[in-house]
Image 1 (spheres, rainbow, N blue to C red):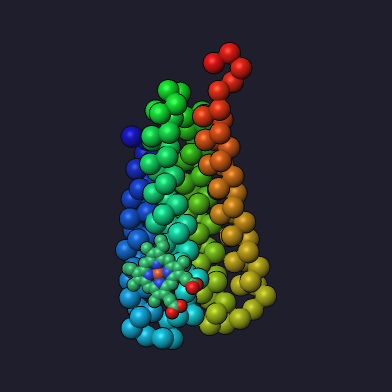
Image 2 (cartoon, rainbow, N blue to C red):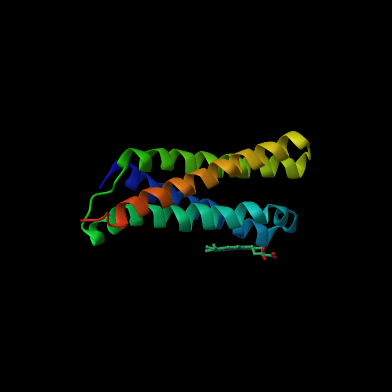
Length: 135
Ligand code: HEM
């Protein structure tokens, strides 16, 4: 298993733990409900998406009988996806307690990095799965 694949799966499990703790925290203390965006995105972009990236990178090329087209791009995607998610959630949370244009802009910028990571996954997977003429 490639190291970035293992890293995606480990990160996914860590996000599940963190998001679950925050979920229980939100049930316990209503004031934490303002962090619902953080909980839902830790769950969906952290736990669910990172697990799918990890399993997808490992399994889909094998299903198609072709190696992953750009393994280095998978590694870059790991760092972009994690930096994008953590930055977006950190600055979103800081912006709740201390609203400012700067936090808004940083939240959006890291969100953009997250979208960039998604584009890398789409491109790499399609380049791997779609057969070239003659293949
Ligand atoms: C440990 C288990 C979980 C707990 C304790 C928990 C707790 C919560 C709580 C308290 C809320 C706020 C509800 C409200 O608005 O009053 C919430 C919202 C949400 N949760 Fe979870 N949750 C858990 C698991 C999950 C999972 C597995 C997912 C998805 C993979 C998820 C996705 C969401 C989403 C998308 C929202 C936002 C819903 C909305 O905006 O209306 N949660 N969760």
